[in-house]
Length: 337
Image (cartoon, rainbow, N blue to C red; front, side, top):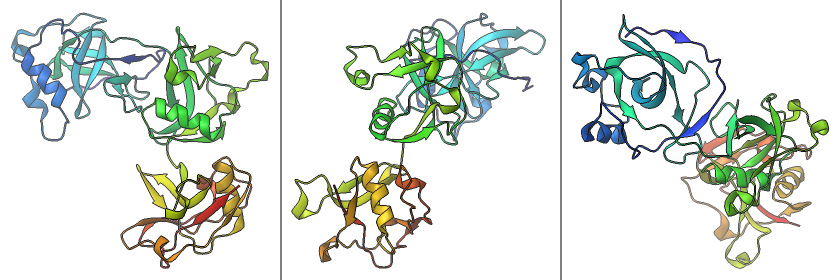
């Protein structure tokens, strides 16, 4: 398959496509079933050639198709057709980081590619656009980045800094368990207008989720808000503190699970940072009781050292995550106030 790559220079558009939408033409139930189940792990390109490929059926410019690219199937829009090579120039969408099923967005690199007709599965209905769209941009991982909003044809970023609670609401809106604020300007400057996100409207839908900032003179794209949909912390109460939210074992969410923090060499500055992240002013380390010690088999956050000025615990120095690394098996227990 000849590959002619065109650099992305189009305006980013986020769309939502549902595979159960009407299939327009050049398709059948068998192909649709394969699209739903396709993972790209055990199927070769040759097994996906269309039954009518020998007829060289052509797809209309600006129509949407399901096609094989990079060992996965994707929805894309046909931009042009090369009759000599029987290939289509397709602008692809990829699965959205929000983890919400059937939601897609444009990739940012090498997304406009020439694809052989034999690797086009079928034509599909046009994607449906829902607004406003909130997404994370320019982060090293899919679950972190600069917060950007698309609404009524306008892209933009969030002007005011976001707190940890606001970040958690946005991350839940994107399909994650929660999240934390990464600060301002961490993932570079955005562009476009400045948006204000009304956090209380994310779930109620009874009010405007995103509104343009009426007076953007105090906004600066170099300080665009950013979040991380990971590394939340919580206090898990012991048997005697079930009714108390400010006392308990300190856990951090990492790689889709809450993990304990090792209490070895724990210092007061660590406590201050953790309690402030939880919304308190300060706190103290409490003595763990005999039944609070954990058995082997746990992954621990190890050797945390904070200066006290950090806004979140994962910004403090630490030696990473270690299976059975905490020799004392003593987790951090805090009383925040």
